[in-house]
Image (tube, rainbow, N blue to C red; front, top):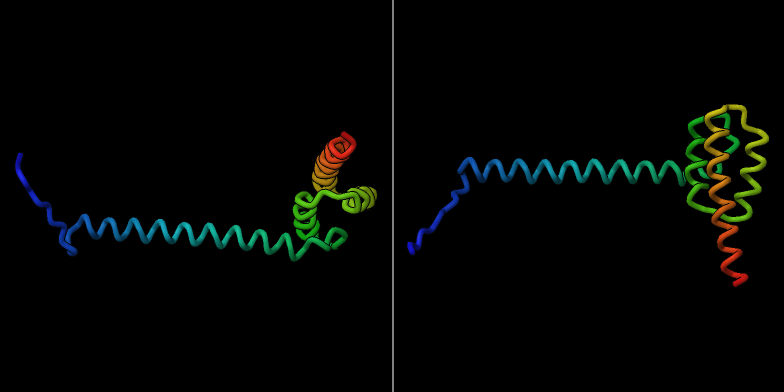
Length: 113
């Protein structure tokens, strides 16, 4: 068995390729993290914009409400469905409302047991 030592010099092509790959991975992670942060920030910022004149703000508010099922939000979504005219937003709100009602019904049945 031979005792060979492989020396990687700092100026070698392999070392440069590793540096570039590491920088690329870090860059992608930073971009992804920033994207997630911006999306969450927009949803949190517009959670009260359910009746806004801007459809994208209403969509962001629906996204926020989806993650917060409670009785008050069910009532709010029912009012919203009576008010909303856009079919896409009405469909989204209907799906969210059905999910909230399911979650709340399951919680109530667990509490009764």
